[in-house]
Length: 227
Image: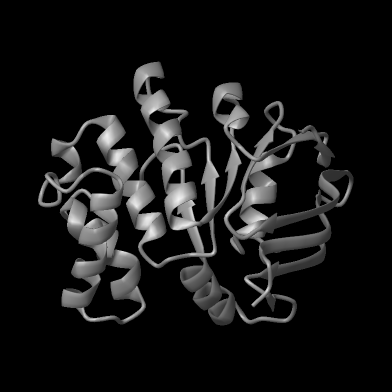
C-alpha cells in the first residue's frame, strides 16, 4: 500500500473562450500522506476550489496526473472515476448538502447504499461514525431539526462512513458562527488523529489552517509551501 492518500503531479487547468485563455491552475504538484492534515489558504480566485475539484475527480485537469490511494486516474472512464471517488474520497462543503427528507442516520448511510451495500449494514456503519462525531443522540433527527453545527457534523460523518483515504473539505466552517466553528476545528483534528484519515482543507480561516500539519498557500493558480 502506498504511503500517500492523494498525489498530483504538474496539474494545470485553463479555460479558453477562443479569444482569451485563463489559467486557473499552473503546474501544481502535491502529495498528501496517509493520516496527514493539510490546509490550503489563499485569496478568493486563487484556484483553491478548482484544485480541490480536480483532486476529488470532480473535474478533469487540462494536463497533469492524479493518483488516489495508489491508483493512477489517467485514462479512467467517468464510471471508473466515480467508483474510485466513492471508495477512496470523502467530501465536506461549506453548505452541508444533506437530504432534508432523510434522517441523519440515513444521510450518513447513503454513500454505502449507493455502493450497493445492504441498508442494514450501511446503517450500522453510519451509527458508528455518528457516534465518532458526537451525534449518537441525534441519529433519527432530520436536518431541519438539527443546528448548523450538528448538520455539519452529519456531513462530516457522511464523508467518513466509507473509510476514505482522504477527505476533501471546502470551507467546512465557512457557514458557522465562531463558537461553532471552533468546535468543528477540534472535531476535525480529533477525527484526523483517531481515524487516521487524511484531510485536505481549503479555508480562509487562519485558525483552522493553523491546526494542520502543513499549510500551503495558493497565489494565481500556483501552490506555494507556507509551513
